[in-house]
Length: 169
Image (cartoon, rainbow, N blue to C red; front, side, top):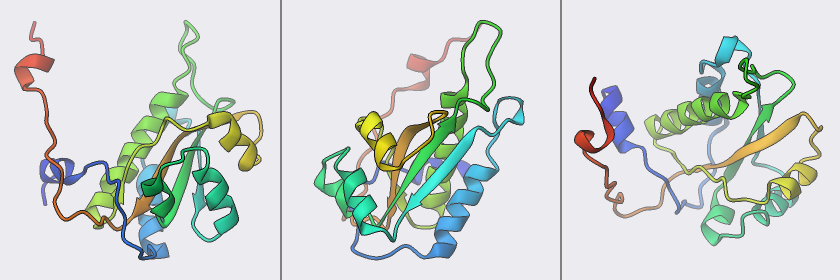
C-alpha cells in the first residue's frame, strides 16, 4: 500500500473489538515513534503502555470517561519531557510538536498493522499525571487507545479541498 493510501486508511477509531493486541504489534507501533524526527533530534518523549494493569487502566479511563475509550485493550500515554525538549530563541517549547509527530507515526503504524487508534487530548491531564506518578518534567500530551477496530463501516472523512487550504506565492 502506498503512503497516501495508508494516510487515507487511518481514521479515529472509537469502537474496539474485545481482542488483545499482540506485544509484537505494540512494539512495532512504539518503534515507529522511536524513529520519528524531533527538533534537534532531542527526542523528548516517553511512552507508558497500559495494557496489563487493569487497576491503572481503569483509573486512566476515568480521566476521559467515555465507554469506547474504556473498551480499548491498550492505552499509550504519550508524555513529553520538557527538560529535554528544544526551545526556540523566543522561548517556544517544541515538546508538543515533537510528540505530535511521534504520535502520528504511531497512528499510521497502527493502521498499517490493522489496528486502530484515536488521539485523546480532552482528558484530565493533571489527574492522569498523578495516577501515573510522573515526575514534574513529564507531561502527558495525549492518550492513544490502541486495538482492533470494531467498525462495520469506515467513517467518511470529509476533507477540505486543496484550494481551501493552500496558498501559492
